[in-house]
Length: 120
Image (tube, rainbow, N blue to C red; front, side, top):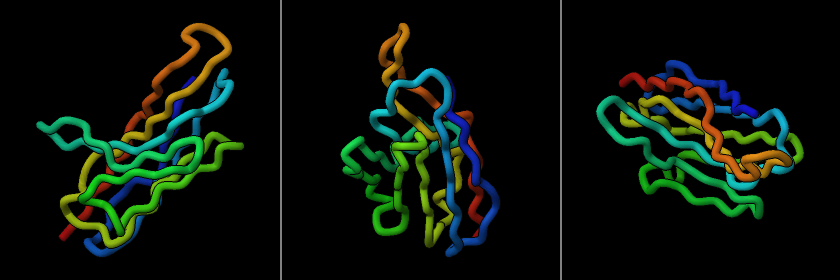
């Protein structure tokens, strides 16, 4: 069971990037999915989360600029990032809470992280 993220890279301030993440393996269903980010010396922080009911929540710093979406049928989550700022530079991690048919029956999965660099 794993999360595979992609889509990071280098972009100029004001530009856009789209991150993707797919959950695969022995999963009954994916519950909440989300994106976190981390910069050196700081704690990992929530960027956006989307529930099974497609309810969303965003960090104040990204509201109006980032959009999280998901395809539950394919266990996929995206993060559309627009109007990027140098302060958005970080390693972005996708997250999923999953239900499994074998122990552990609930599990928290993290992707490997994808680097987003925004130049000024």
